[in-house]
Image (cartoon, rainbow, N blue to C red; front, side):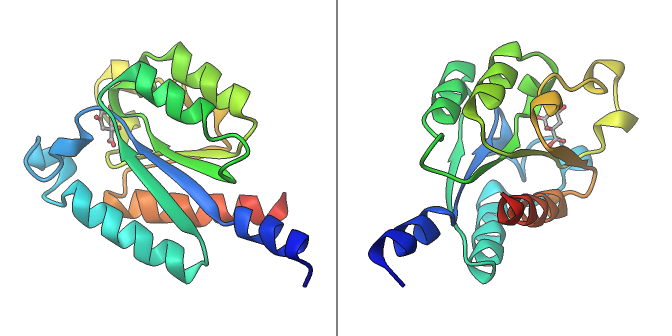
Amino acid sequence: MSAKRKSIKGKSRKILVIHGPNLNLLGAREVNVYGRTTIAEINRRLKDAAAKLNYTLRVVQSNHEGEIVDLIQGATNKYQGILINPAAYTHTSVAIRDALMASNLPSVEVHLSNIYQREEFRQRSLTVGACVGQIAGFGMDSYLLGLQALTSVVRTI
Ligand code: DQA
């Protein structure tokens, strides 16, 4: 295999994972809704799953909308896809939606809870329209299923 081909192959194996606001508190925050799994545990399981699929992950958690926009903008040409739980910004952020659209990368939106069974204001996602699809309601498994879905989309590109 040529060096060029190798580097294209290497590139095709990086995914950016973004956890939105308050997800740093998982395990302690509203455990009746989000359970006791911590973000560290989710990240560990995600990295294990990614390694089995031959992907490497960069995982970032941010409480700041602009920082998330910057991360998404910086992802083009560095990553092959984005796995994102925009958390509360799901329901409010035109800026994150626009950044996802502009990135030209396939994105999958995930939620621990089933947002469609919750308060009305959570039942609308502004960001999902910029994503290939959404997985919600399976707790930590939403992330693992989302990763699987995203990698299968990346493979077809
Ligand atoms: C969440 C659902 C959002 O409505 C909420 O603001 C979150 C977490 C979820 O993963 O279920 O912070 O994205």
